[in-house]
Image 1 (cartoon, rainbow, N blue to C red):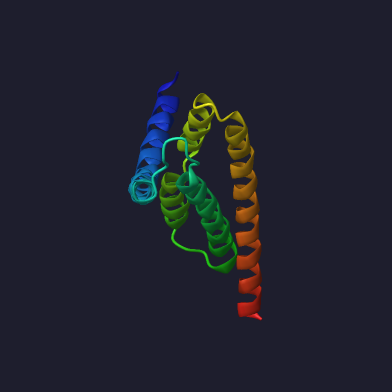
Image 2 (image 1 turned 90 degrees about the vertical axis):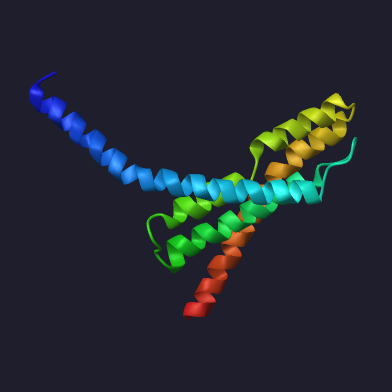
Length: 149
């Protein structure tokens, strides 16, 4: 490696740290907010033994609906601050929704002797999540068009 390329690498690294530090910070802050909200919902609506994980389903589906609306709003309605999308999308909604709890719930249902319920939950959650994200995006887009017309 030449001295010039070493200087270039240090410059790029310095630039990346300077540019990415605020992004990492807002993602962490948003993640803490979203995960706290999810945890509060799970505490308020616990899954009983041998019960269906309604709270996790509701969190994941509502989070996907909010993500659909948010992405349309911040890409088609207004251009917000460069940290808005990482804060709200990756941070808050990424922390709010939970694939790991969903996967754990599927495993718990199957291990508790409810394979049909586990399979239903395994199929229903991503289907509902996709439908609600698409529907929320479409409704938000329709509201934006109506508002700007």
